[in-house]
Each structure stands twice: as structure tokens, then as C-alpha cells.
Length: 292
Ligand SMILES: C[S@@+](CC[C@H](N)C(=O)[O-])C[C@H]1O[C@@H](n2cnc3c(N)ncnc32)[C@H](O)[C@@H]1O
Ligand SMILES: [Zn+2]
Image 1 (cartoon, rainbow, N blue to C red):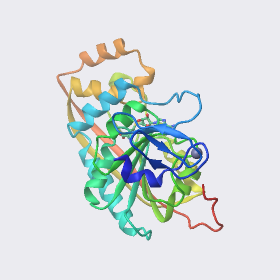
Image 2: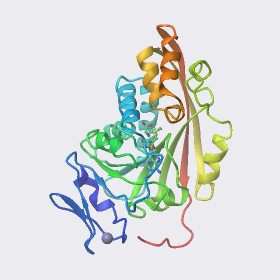
Image 3: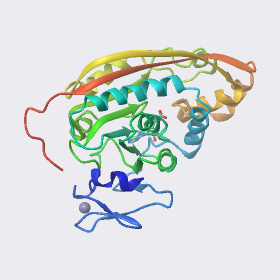
């Protein structure tokens, strides 16, 4: 619930502490943010529409696909990495796991299952996603926020930061993580969703992705571990439609044409799921950081 994490959040306008009353999250300077009926809060400021937010349809497809367990082996590996990371953190008090671009909160909830005393912050720019994340786990607080902007999270407050198929912000990730904090980044490999990528003409993962991930984090983090998680899935057409609908191709493809291609598939398809999980450790700070 939001109450579990509100003291870890900061006002997106002035950087002040936040407190929660029945209907709103407020800072001492009077900035107030309504708590939605579903229990999440939006700490987005400004009028710029965040163009990369997942739509309601994409989030529904993601929820349906993840909910039946197709990516469970990945969720288990991510949860285990979070547990190991939290155990390695020297911060005292309840452990904090945050997820930047959390979507429906699926991976964060699994991590919290393995960490009985930890709390979780799900951050995502899509209110459709955050609405679901708010229900994903009792010890999770869900916040609408843009990870490309200053994150509304207190400096040095997070033990493990999760980032699964979502945008990254190296300087901000480094700021919110405490000393010995762990960043867990999951990206698809070029084998992900083969042979559907080829058969359906989905957007493929570019080979440069790995290098770009390392570059975006390099100045602030050292990569301390990397593993590839690959497994087969037998997907009916409905599951294929969901996995297409939740991914980047949903942005770019004419949905009628895609549906026709999916209908032409055999009743079930053998599909590869293939992910790279990288573990990063935050560099120790050499100079005091600005506390916000
Ligand atoms: C491919 S989905 C992954 C969601 C989740 N991590 C998962 O694997 O189920 C990417 C997510 O990033 C979110 N997102 C995109 N741009 C964002 C931004 N600038 N700040 C925060 N979240 C963003 C989208 O709304 C979407 O939920
Ligand atoms: Zn404020």
C-alpha cells in the first residue's frame, strides 16, 4: 500500500518530504497529489504527455499473458536476484525494492514474495499499468512517474532497483540506490520470440541494445553479473496475440493486418523466450550527493 512507501517518496515539485492523509499525498509546502480510488498516486508534473506510456490495451494484454505464467522462469530468476541484492545491501531498516517501468507490478510482487520484510515501489508512466500494480502485492506502493525525469524517490533509499524491458536513467538510478545497492536490468536478446518475430514481422531487438544499456549505466554502475534465461513456450493464437499486443510492435503495426497474420498461424506455435539479466552495483560515491 502507498502508506508503506510514502516516506520514501519526495514531492516532484519541491523535493520535500511527503505524508499521506485520507485522500492525498502532501508536502509541507502545500503541494498535494490525489490518491486514486485504486490506491495509487500520480506524481507526474507538467503537461507534457508521456508518449511512451503503455495504453490500456497493452497493459491488459500484458496482464493476461504474464498472469498465466508464460514468463514465470524469468520472474523466478528476477526475484532471486532481488533477494540476493537485498541481502547484500548494508542499509539498515526494512529493505526497499523499487521497479522503474514496473508495468503491472508482476516482477516486483514476485520479489516481495521472497523478501517478507521488504516494501516495494512500483513506478510507471502509464496510469493503466499503475492501477494494476497497486493491487499486485500488499506491501507495494504504486506511483505514476516518468523515469526520464527526476524520480520522486528519496536519495539513497533503495536497496534493489528493478528495470525489466523499460526505460533507464543512469544518474537517477544511481541517486536513489543506497551504497551497495543493486540494479537488476532485464532486456530481451535477439532470439526473443523467435520464430514469431520473423513470421509476423515484429520489431526485432537490435544487436546494439546490450551496448546501449551498458553505456547508459556505465558511468554510475559496474556490471557484476550477467546471465541469459531462455526457455520454450507453447502458445495458442490468443497468447500470441497477447504477447504481440504487449510489446513494442503494438505501437507500430496495423492491428488488422497483424490479426490476419496471427489467424494464419497453426493452432499452437513453439516460441522461444530469451532474456538477458544484468546485475549492476552502484559505484561508491566519491563526493556527497545533493540530497533532494
Ligand atoms: C515493455 S513494458 C514492461 C513492463 C514491466 N516491467 C514488465 O516487464 O511487465 C514497459 C513499461 O515502461 C513504461 N514506461 C515507458 N516509458 C516510461 C517512462 N518514461 N517512465 C516510466 N515508465 C515508462 C510503460 O508504460 C510500460 O509499462
Ligand atoms: Zn512540494
